[in-house]
Amino acid sequence: MTLFLAGGALLMTSCSSDDDDDNGGGGGTTGNAPFASVTAKDGSSTLTATIDDTEKTIKFGEFQNITDYSAIEVTFKMNKGYILKTPANLTSNVNLMAPYNVVVLLNGKTEETYTMTAVVPETPKAVLSAKVGEVEATVGDDNSITIKWEEGMEINHMVFELELAEGATVKSPEDCTFDLEFEEGKLVVNYLDKEIVYTVKATDYQDPMIALGWTDVTSEFAPLPNYIKVYKTTKAGGIENAAAYVVMLGSQAEMGCVGDGVTNKKTITELEADGAYKVYLVGIDSSLSQIMVRDGKVVQANTRMSGTLGQNADGSYQMSYANVFDGKVYTFPFRASGSYEAPTVEKGTLWEPKTAVEGLYYILYEGQILTADDVTRNESLAQFFGETELYARAVIGITEYGKLFIYCGDESGDYIGTSVSQVAKIMKDFGCVNAMQFEAYDSPDLHINKKETVTNLLAAAGTPKKMQCAIAFK
Image (cartoon, rainbow, N blue to C red; front, side, top):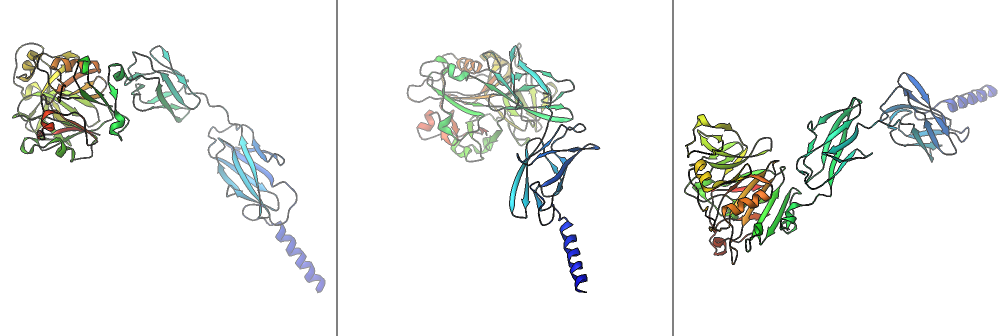
């Protein structure tokens, strides 16, 4: 009986030592090799790794039946005494695009780390080459496309010509066009059933405002988004004693219309207290009403047609001759000849801007500096157009590719301001194709981050003029 019980105990101990726990072998060790084998699924086949216990490596060769190495099913068979710690399960999905650390425990205490790798085939490049015009870009192994900017390139409208691998297609942007002045672009290419994202960027860009004699003072009004820059000069357009500030805004900027119109005019300080915008330019103060559109709704109709700046629902900017009929905004073409004709619904085109503000009159239209006759023909009246009428003017211009320039002149002390044609020429030199004026003489004003810029005569006298609204941006 004693012999039988001893034999039974021996049998039970032997059975216990043969059982495996969830992550590996049971108690006791059989050597210095943690793994009996490591295998991986290769489609319908199985690939066995080579294990080096001296170098602590687990190496798979090249998989023949799969292309996605980011979630390969790997199975570990452990020797006695070793428990798999990482990954958590004996059969796990493992990312073998890069070396993977496998951690095992000896007798549940001592850790050993093995490096597991696979031979990952080099994926052919989706973009083989890129260029802008005749200038070649560099396509990097890090999925970057870098173009060196050269004079004459349009930084806000960089059109890339791509050479793609066979089977690769461009997903976005379809026209391969980027605005690279303020931020990097993203090119998405479909290739081998994957979306590959390329970072597109420009180097060596030179700010043309500096060459035009303006000083970058953006830091004085920080913090600002990178697509808002501020400049100042005392010789606007090369004119002695013509001081002004300019705000340059990328097409990413959001426009606002702040104010209550003719019924409750406010100073710029009162207007900038309404909303969280970065830039505020005063509108107009007149017996005439200007168009005001906010959140897609007309909050004030106009009493005469004039140039109007608006931002559409898709974020694009538009400057057009505009007039309101029955609570709706209509645009009208420029009249190059003839006399003024009152606008009618039948002559107009419906426009549904998200935000819009009307100015006093156009001064630059499709690259043409307008005369008093041009303005009278299209808007019924023109004011302060004489070449000797030098005033501190507030103007907004827009470039062909949607960048905005806000100009505000200073008329304090010895500063003399500019004529209409002079400020129109300044806006054209900035690259604007269209521009319109707001206030002139003693009332133009511009605040950035609630900081003053110019000093107009009324503000200096302590009696700032009240306006129908402010054109705001953030």
